[in-house]
Length: 247
Image 1 (cartoon, rainbow, N blue to C red):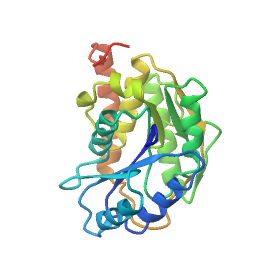
Image 2: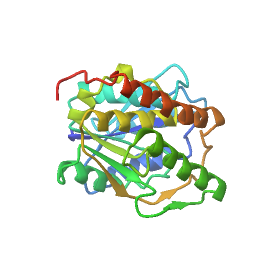
Image 3: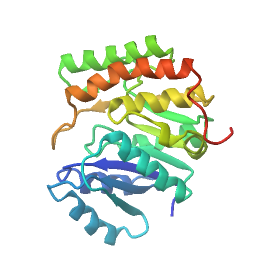
């Protein structure tokens, strides 16, 4: 059993799931993998079950009753990881928009370079996005800029979903108090970590949009992110962001 876990949430990812799992297990650094599966009708869970026999003790799956949102999937995964006593817990998409090889760089930023949280950043060295239409690039970039203005966060890619967390951060954050389920979840987790005094660093990555499967982005997720940051700022102003465990 490794001390490092990669959490991959899935819903209808049959085209990608076996390939992404095999690539992670082929990395020079050893990672275990937890799939958080939201009852995909396309048979994603069946593929994972088959692979669990091949990768016994390294590949795990949490099956949920239905599609409940990205944030709740990661919270379930974080709690499972803490119970299993992993020291480094990474989150990553199933669709190869995040290059699995960058998991090693994110891990090293935490394990060797003093970061508490390492963010795979699309915007720390410019705009490093491949295969997105210009409208979506601009929307994402300026959404992150808006978040920085409202919250005061010194993080270029606030909505990034490619992140390595140290155990002490996830133990300290009150995971049950995290409110948002879409991309606002990513903002809320980073904002909470910063407000609790943890060191968040950005590691430059190249983000490549999926070539197989269907995007889960929708207008509701984007709207939650826009209005959610104002709620975060208010919660912080009124002292409602508190650790569940003393730092």
